[in-house]
Length: 426
Image 1 (cartoon, helix red, strand yellow):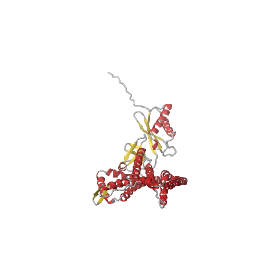
Image 2: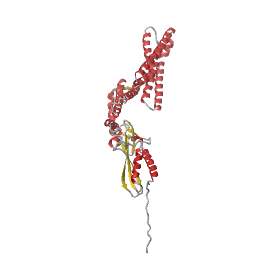
Image 3: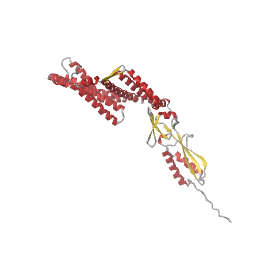
Image 4: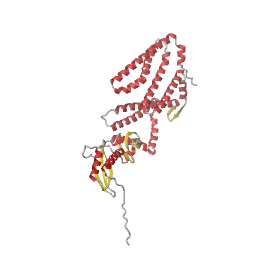
């Protein structure tokens, strides 16, 4: 029968084995470490903030975890020095408290930097804080070693490998921490890459997504051996993943690969105006699985990346953002045709969004057809801001044309039929 793990209660050691003089010296040392930690952190924040704006990320992190982290390092050094002459039970109790505080603040800061939704952040903050503080209480009270011994006794064999419940819990915790760290580092690299204006935007996005995928993969591969799990066991998972890709996940894999193709060939870029099927809007995001179009009415259209590769896509701003709008209008046969054409052209030239300098893109009026009810005209205009909308431009031009037509007596016809009644001659 195995011997039970002894309870190493830090509180009982502090109360039973610490004398008055020892307690006083340790409290003085703690106060000195706190003042030194505050001074060092304050000095570093001022130094980093004064260098350049690029250190904003480091200053924010230092403000959150700098004071407890520096304090922990100073307390550790102080404990190592004082332990030569006398017991340091107070410092032994303060070290895990500061370590827990550093861990809570560091994980919460990393989550705030990685995640953007406040609800998810608040939930994870509570989970992390409660988990760490409960673990600290169990450690200080001496109960944690017995719990770990019990979890380690629940074990099973899988092939040639021996697993325990404690090992699996450690693996999950280390993997979660590795993924959070990888995402945090990926966000840090993304912020730096997006500032490199010399690189094409699509290339920057491709590098960001590739870096994020690589860091997460490396984080998992390094986390598993860290807890004693051989990564060769992932070969079974790799085989299952291959079968899944062949059966049901091929669309997801296709969208993922298509996203990288779109970014690398630069046929679609953020800010482009696209028409995909019946959807029209501005590309706001190119994500791993889908591309997000923001329509002019505020709605957002989610388009799988594979669709953009395999179907016809109209890019209104691929090589040049200028687009032509055709505005049809009809006048009656009794109206002054030349005057009407001049009014159409003048209305276009007076609009701020219409190009007017280039002779090739200047507004022009064409006679399209002699219809049943009137003469069909077409006003052609060019604009450089398709994201500003086309319907509103048409409406403004139509309103200006309507006002000028009424003042000039030019009639817009409507369908009519002349009926001639012939009397019956007998």
